[in-house]
Amino acid sequence: MAQWLEREMTDRKVRVLNPTSASRLPLSRLGQSQPLCIFRVTWQSGTERVLQLNEAYLSKFIRTVCLCEHGEPDILQVHTTCPSTLLDVGDDQCMIHLPGKYTYCEAHEVCRRVGQERNLRMFMVGQHAMKLRERFKLGAQVFTGLHTLLFDVGKMNSGWQLSDPGSSTGIAEGADLQWSFGKPISGYERIVLVSKYGLLDTEHRQILNAVTCELTRVPSPLKSTVQLFLNHQPRNGLFFKTVSSKGCFSDSIQETLVKCAFRCRNDEVCRSVYYNKGSKKCFLSRFVDSRLPGKSWEKETDYVRLLRMNW
Image 1 (tube, rainbow, N blue to C red):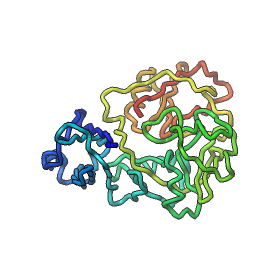
Image 2 (spheres, helix red, strand yellow; image 1 turned 60 degrees about the horizontal axis):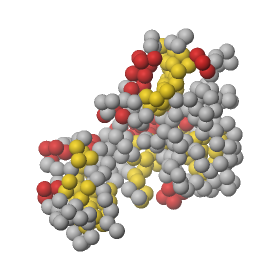
Image 3 (cartoon, rainbow, N blue to C red; image 1 turned 45 degrees about the horizontal axis):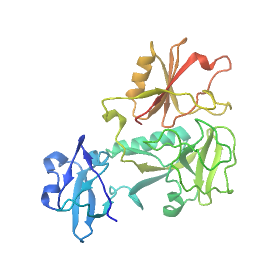
Image 4 (cartoon, one colour; image 1 turned 180 degrees about the vertical axis):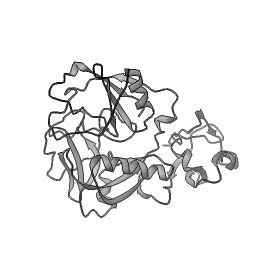
């Protein structure tokens, strides 16, 4: 059956009526100084068409609608070629493995910087962590973006939260998680590592590991003129249960909740906001949405928590 694909470019929908040169965006729109990414479109008739976008527009290439001359869907395949510095791991997914030694939060930051240097948006691999066993020779454990820093799931195979842009409440249904010991070890506030043996959950503490970064085609929230924040309470409460769990936070003093939220709005990797109305402390949870490392004298009622919706 033919597949429908839609393309949204510069906030408007473009329809390609047939595979002619009219479907190619002019180079003046693309920016000649930027490297081009190739999108190969195959029609059921066997005709192929190559669309070119520079890497700056790659994140906006969300969906493509192609119709045959008679108005019927006639697309057989769309294939995205990865930028030259990234490895194509299949299923239109592009990754780069960094074998250095980083803390958990440093590893997230390294992926952000690697993407920034290439004019791309990249993140610590999460949903597709099992691809690492297939495509990379793992000699040591590697961080993944799977975690339970927002709420605990015990030994269940579902409910694991993600660092993937576009996700907020949990892992996509049907994700293939293969654990080293058959199932998660369980515990509070877990992060997940991957090795050649499978996935392994562990405490969120100061351990050093390598990281693999993945390209996302979800547009940066900084490109949106409207930012949505939801007053959201995690089901396990606002505070971590263990003292070793720290999350990836930045903090500052802000006079109002609005100013605190505005600080999050200007941070591409901010996932949620905690604001203490009494002390005026503003905490931004970065890279992953998580609970707060609270103090023994603090109460949950001291804080307002806002979840950033368009991550």
